[in-house]
Length: 461
Image (cartoon, rainbow, N blue to C red; front, side, top):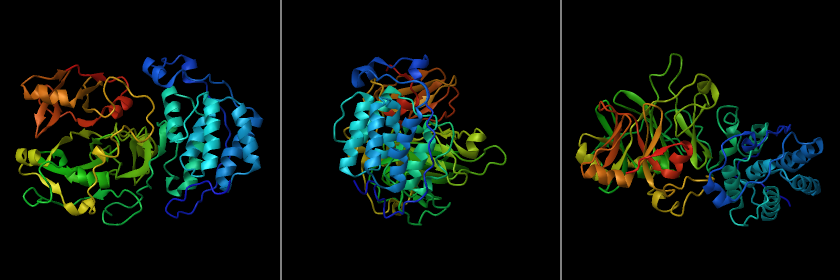
């Protein structure tokens, strides 16, 4: 089996691989963690037994040959086949995490099939030929299969061989690297304020140009927009633009903002990137090209610190060391006609930022569910049900089913949980506290909110 690694836009493979020392940790559930929910067992079955203790020297050597050497040499030969056989005989499902990472980039059908068969043997689960990487990863996530103690070293070796631009991304931190996968796009590594500089990536918009509502004749009244208000200034970020850019670094109402939009989880969020502790420069947010359970992984181009996009806190790098958490502003998901009628003074991003594209990912690509692995999904709502998510004063995450909340609020009902009150705003929903102050809320798909807030309350309606 000759060439097995995907050629990504004629990139040159580089970065030598690091030798792995694979010491293994015990399964989380064997250590007294919460048992798997019943719905996980119903969908995925019971997890396989997890061996304890480190790998033998012989098995470590097999892992080196099958996974590390093959990636480094970009070839698969007799030695790899023998080593993979030894791995299959080990019956150790923890090894499947490395197989999953390799499968994400392998296009050779024969090798893909061999690795999939090995993964099925280790998991004790027959797997289909189609979308084997996604299927395997779903099982690993749902069962919470542990990874090797040196897993990041191995994963970094695989990923940075494909794209050296990830070298500074794959570092230790408060992030579960098992759940990180490639989203199929390259990292946006452009310097700040380079909106118009082309790249083979999803290009963030910095300091975007805006117009008045009257000048935005290109927008239809039913076009979806994400509305933000800061200190009495209003701005609309059309979904058509955000689906192309996925990240905007802007200034509104005298405050700096970073605004990520994850097309996969239906969430536009707004984070204040100023008024941080002394000595910390404004984070300039970019798309890394990576995902974590189908949610975009964003990072700061200045420090290469990775942020949890959904929660707003730094998880790696200098900003994580300083415990930086970004304050969240409210984003109102509405339509252009309603938003501009409620806020005629609003500004809106210019049409040119859409780069001539008019995508509609929300109603097309994801129609049959998440297209990237997410593992188990809380069954209380459909995966793509829109919710309004907010954190109460006590730190409790709460999700409000948007459709039910809209009906209730339109009929004059009060919706209140702890200090949180919901109110209608320009066709969308805003969360405020008992004093009427904004508390920072946003709309998202249920699967995304519930996986990042697994103990979330769900408003009963």
